[in-house]
Image (cartoon, rainbow, N blue to C red; front, side, top):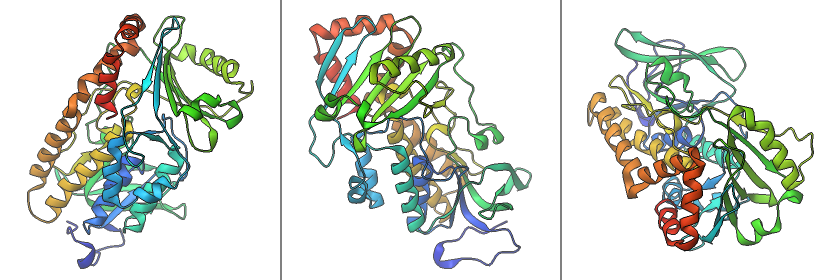
Length: 400
């Protein structure tokens, strides 16, 4: 078995296969934060990413204020604020029938507010930090196979493409799956939960409209708009300005409505009829992995562990924190402070508590009910027009 070591006491490899303490598959916010915290603790880490950064992702680009403590612990608060971004100050809810409720987001100082940053910039920044802290990063390297040295135990081995394009193998004592809601690692480990059985089939559709298509109000007010679309079904969207005057359009609907949503965006914001910069993602519903870690040393983080309703804009926050929690558990096991099974148990418990903090879980469930059942949303916004404090309270649970 490959011995678990720290950066200060590397053991010589017994063969030509690189041996690490931890292999992290996926370099998004969950994988990059996990790798960075592991490297900070002195562990040998390899990050294996199938894409080449920078790259865009289907995302609303919103950074929840609770992300800032994580960035501070990673030492990137100031450098991240230097990236092109927009501070969000107001939110507007718009129903399919035209009901509007608009109010200011909870007051925060300029250094702890909610901002938007394009994922291409954020993810590349986080990955660069992990690499600067000592993590080895291999990009354009999809994992094609995972296996153990011995039945029921031993090291994890991952076959993937190397930096030179040739076949490569990485060996590690611990394995972190940060490869998204369709995680290949979680599927290999038998931990990939099935999609929700009763939820409508929904697809996420996203693009960045150029600055000439962004209404001045969005930039001037730092406005994020959450809206439902008429026509039946559960079509909805989130609109927010991002750096350089662009507008993030994140739309969700049944596959049959995607072309309709594109036409709406073209008419509403003047996008060219041949606009091709749309990105899609599915599914948007998936039961959480229970537990999100195995006693063998497999840890799931971010969307690989649990997918939340994107309407609340907290995905990056959960990704960052889950990556940090998994890193803390792995470090304890690597240092011999607890058994791997205990580390997996501790992470599962901390992961569960993460989603229950400050009532976020039930707010997320309310949001999911509202987007899946537009009539419920219509009723809620009608009530909120007379009692906007209800929506303010729910919003504050998410964006304090």
